[in-house]
Length: 264
Image (tube, rainbow, N blue to C red):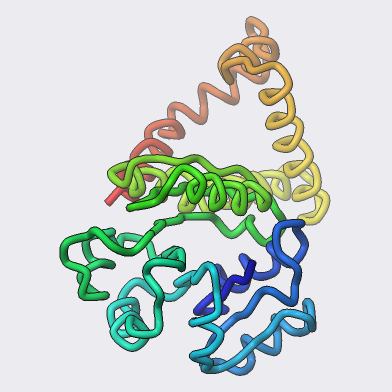
């Protein structure tokens, strides 16, 4: 099975790197196309067996799966240029362009009846490069086997969930934008750590391990976060004082509003 990724930037390159470390594709079955030679050289420096080209029609025509990993505003022009190279009966087309709907993708390929191409919309996050992405997947005209294949591919680089297309925007806000929100918390906590006496790298190490412990604890117990909070908040204690100070300054409200605002 061969896969061609059109666009080798942050997300396309991360997918290529993640796939090359997995068991579903051999590195030599992965091709990345990008007009930026520096981007391709960076991918080759990671794994020289991945095929890279600035332009290659054969790489598109021979692929079982074609991944569109470019900016949303570039998708229409790209598909206008390659739509006659695609074999809609044999190939699976995967778009990771946020906000570009199935209806739009079909129109860009002159498939206005939405009855031919097997399409997937996929929204990962940047942790895909280390095999820890939270990925949302939606399908159009796909069989159960095809849905399983795409889900298995992205499960090999983290965890994926198959949803209706109407939930893709919400998934983007919660999972893809969400990783930036998590980083912002880490940055804020690092600054607090420095203020109370730790060096920045010490502070970062402490916070990362604390978050990793919280994640692993929730996975192991399956409990609600509030249950674990209750275990460490004693009457008159310092933890509840800290939590109340965060809430007074709008912590929960800010998180909810940030996620809701990103759901567009």
